[in-house]
Length: 97
Image (cartoon, rainbow, N blue to C red; front, side, top):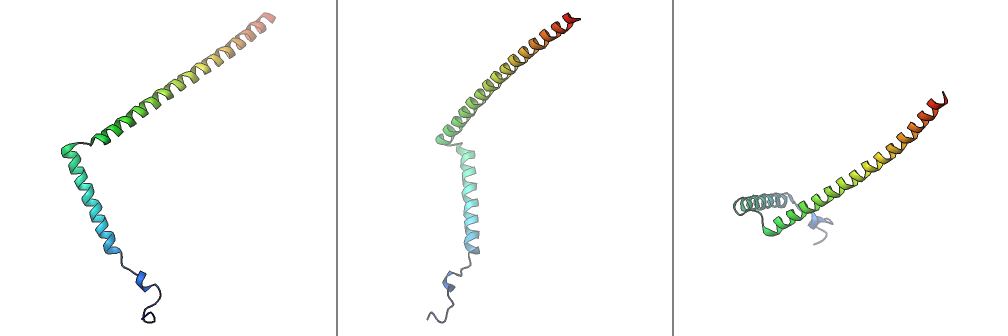
């Protein structure tokens, strides 16, 4: 019996039909989900999750704004000191003339 069939013959299957059926099922499920959301709206846990994401993003954006503000203040202080140093140098050089 094994001599009549080559090794691996049992594994040689045509899976195209299975792939087509899977694609059809995916399309059906997606369509039903979209129809449910259109008629019922989002489910409570989905809304809760989205609200959590919005809250997290808002907190992250606020933190980024605060960090940017601190950096700009630091830069302002550095430039203020450099200006004072240059101003003192100008006064020194003008006084030498």
